[in-house]
Amino acid sequence: MVGDGRNGQFGYGEATYDPKTGRFTLPAVVFAKLGETRLRLTIDPLGRFIELRSDASFLALADRVRAAAPHLPPETAAALLTDYLGFSAEVTVDNIMRLVVPKGMRDALADDADLALVAVGDAVRVWSQRRFREAQAEQRRQLAAEYSKFAGVLLGFGGAVRVWSQRRFREAQAEQRRQLAAEYSKFAGVLLGFGGAAAPAAPAGGAGDGTGGVG
Image (tube, rainbow, N blue to C red; front, side, top):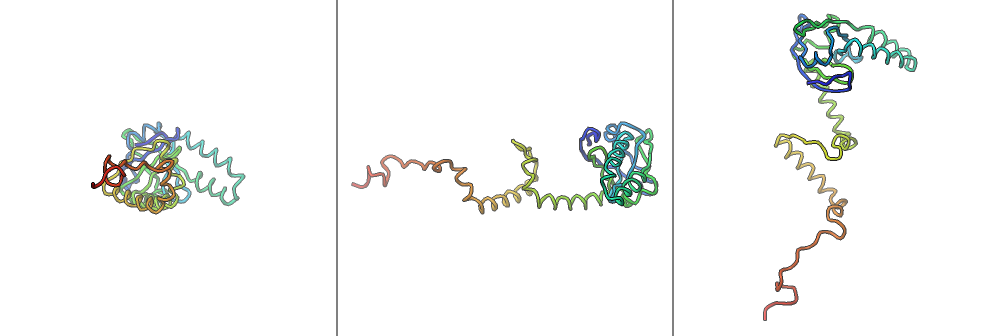
């Protein structure tokens, strides 16, 4: 699934959650990347998900927040220091890779039995699946509106290999062709080259070449 957040990698995984006990099992690859049995939980400042960090990553986060605090409005700095960093909890992963979310933090998971684990930066974000899908849909709408501004960054010089369902590919292809048709006059010369494409030569002795005809 997931890359090591401490090294700036990213990824996705899933887990089953028991809302009554607050317990879920970390996928083995997530546990291996976090690298510790003692972890620190925080709640996203907007209350959307739980963040899971190694102790070292949490201390680095605290240093970043303290460094930024003098440059923030006092109310924002106080909220980050008290309600974000202060409202954190240490948890221990047991020998079968389970951990228990403290009762005061469980609202963020919305009693959803299915969790989405998303590695971003130095943390693993633990979402309820329902909330994650809702947030994902909204983010995709925002990305779609801005896609032309960053598509080149994603594609690079050679582009990535895209794996489509045939149905979605045909739909996207039809839409792209409509867009190309509307703009064709602006780039036709690029495709045709200087002077356009060479016209096929008329066959020797054919009609209209001035050398033959009905005699």
